Length: 296
Image (cartoon, rainbow, N blue to C red):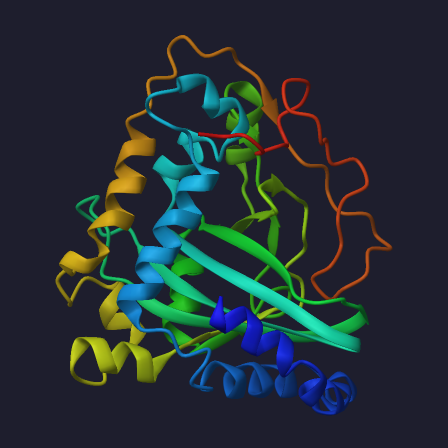
């Protein structure tokens, strides 16, 4: 909680800087986010990030001991076809001008089907709105193509909606999921706030490689393309993350009803800034697919 408290305590300090960033555009937002990620209170080690992200990812995936939980999870079919996964937590705080900063990891599927070593990432951005305290949102971004993975390895940093597009991913099982996978966007985005799935947009969010954190763990400066390309052996400290993925891929869906929720395309008048929540997002568990409260 020290990270959240520190971010909230310093939110006002960044408001004036955030205002300048809004005026100067996405490049400045990337710089702002990078500066935040280097602050000691935000600079988590890679082992801690992997452990945190394993817990985050588990909350989005089906429980092997409860196959029916697949109806309210990232589909097994989406996970099996994924070329990579980015998992992170974003904290938004501020007054009038809000700052968004977060951290997590990205892993890529290797040609032999195993998962790469993790590369640490930071996220950030700015927007308008009133935030009382700190608003915390967890994200899982499914990378649906090699090109999507390359965007995390070659650019050094990227902006959702700028360098690469993302859409809200499907939930559940069956034909609706398969239809969504027939021509997927480069990224499927999933978000969860206070234990509930929520259609929070990542539009305008900057994601960048945390080179210093990677170097501190791996013992030398290693570019993300080498980490995600399999040139670094998967470390033992990431085993929990790999196990979460493998367990979800092993869920037996043979007795699970075919029922999917496929989010509609965003309205044309949606507002950028990462705070949009789709008005038709279902909320009641047992009646819809879009509520994660009470998941085991």
